[in-house]
Length: 216
Image (cartoon, rainbow, N blue to C red; front, side):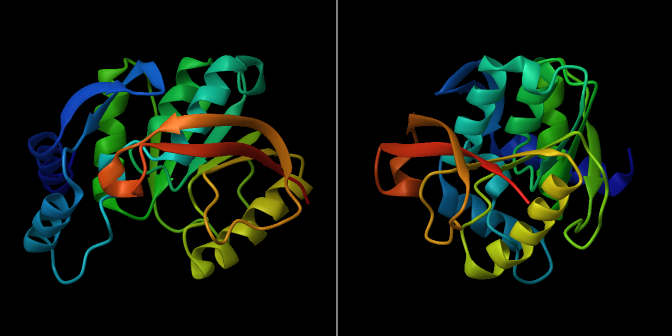
């Protein structure tokens, strides 16, 4: 681990506490108690504007996707899995617990990968970590999982072509989404859940959230 990695890990551990995820109680995540204070801390410790601390909370789309994978382990068992925009690593941890042969947790935020590593340790699973933007690449994975990635028009415009290309090459592509404004049409519903969420983040205590399959 580099000195920078160690700083990120220390930051994650000092601003969160491990506790079970409401909808996936068999998984423990390092979670923050309050988003605004944490975001201010990341900006104070960084250089310039920092991304929101997606890594510090169990978002609805990720919770639904993790639940679906754990309840249907045959989808990932013995297969290679990419958790795109992993955030906290919740979905990646679920895939590893469900028996995936190899799980890659990917994000552009080094704090996210530090959180994913801490959460892998907390759940006694192994994850491969990849920092960087994969959306213009054509890496092959048997399964690609993406939780809560349709939160902006720009993000959806970049993510969807990547996911559709992957599906066209034969990957199983699953998307967890609680009805975000930019969720595209033409997806196949695989499951629906009422997911408990932090009201401070979502303005409501429950989000009706679906797992979708993306096709080419």
